[in-house]
Length: 108
Image 1: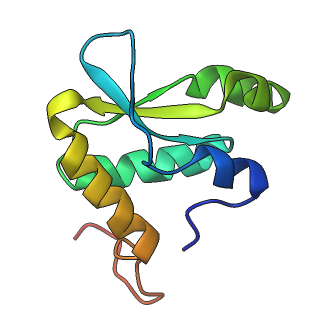
Image 2 (image 1 turned 30 degrees about the vertical axis):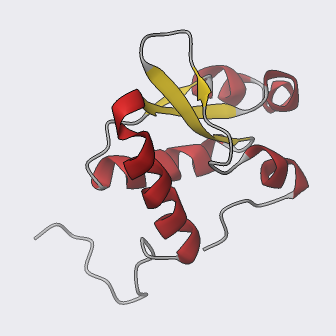
């Protein structure tokens, strides 16, 4: 599975430079222009046990033309989970969260 779907996402996504968010002790680990991709990656982080949240997702979904102006959807994690989150993002890029076509997702 590709981490970034287009040139804009390629420039925004990734964990190269974590920046401190003004909202508490949360840091940004990735950005996406496509809200669904941000939701997918955030879900993978949460599944890995990292308390990740999205910022600006609702605003970007309201008007996708605002996404480049806002810088996309941010994924935030607690400062003390930064290294674990970056490792999970790397695992996502390698495809370690991908499911086989015949995977049972029924939850049973």
